[in-house]
Length: 444
Image (cartoon, rainbow, N blue to C red; front, side):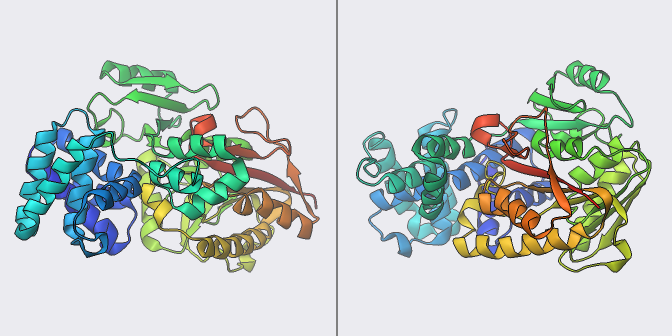
């Protein structure tokens, strides 16, 4: 593996930290603007996500082995050490010697005075492999789980209180695993079985879902990128986790409906609804950021959909022109994102209890405002990609308590259905993103 791949991985990690940008966005942008092979692309992605997923554990090892106080270590060197230890501990195909030598080369390039320090820490890690003890589980369960699975202590404590020890550990472990790749077949252009045949002709193995008629799970890309898959440019499919596909399925959307999607970006649920509507009717898709709406427009164009009208609008504000206009209102609320840590591992480090409390206020305001757009007997779908009860079932219960003209409609024939008819999916249970869906019907 060429050293320039590691240099790019280091650059991506620095940008994520410096600009506080989501990892998946930074990786995509940096790889798009760099000339790298598919092999290097996978290597870089593996290292970046691996470091982010295991950052607390890697830093724990560095603290144990470094003669320099952790807070005094140069930021660039710290990331080089994280990358080196990750390769040694988790990447079996990378020889230890290569991980050390290439890390030292990176150090010499960025801060030559630290090259010996990097060499010493990494070689100490190799010598002490298996001997570096984690916090004592019996004495401090929270610290043990936090370090072992690289989740902040406050979040571990919260989940232990809500879910118990066994479930929480399984959840933490699942959050560090690679998620399955799901594609939504665009049945406006091609049928699912035909698409699967086309994939298999290129050596890509795909399985049809039993839950969603247009869902396909890809077992192995066979060294393809998403953009190089057959039918991507022709709009045959869209990348979308199956948990997200459940939203349109539960909505019972049909041709000719008027749909208002108040937090639409990046557009997976929006275009799915348009597909189920047979590209007949109207979808008003809104977001506060014009650049995010552009993503929806690009996807719609590629998929051959022309019933989506994008608008820049703040969902917390009421638009009187839409009052009682919609057959279906979708509130895919901004949330903590704790259901998609596998896809965005940096989320777990960038949130706090205060952030959750602020989000809950915003979510309720959006839900309450958007509900006014529903026609009598219309439907409001509330969904999040988090597993936090305050943002999910407690939010819905509060809304229904103050809006007696809505009732909870039971959802069936899906995994994760709760006794109250809502859907709550967990990555460690359902092998999907963590996701919540509630369907409410306006009585009058």
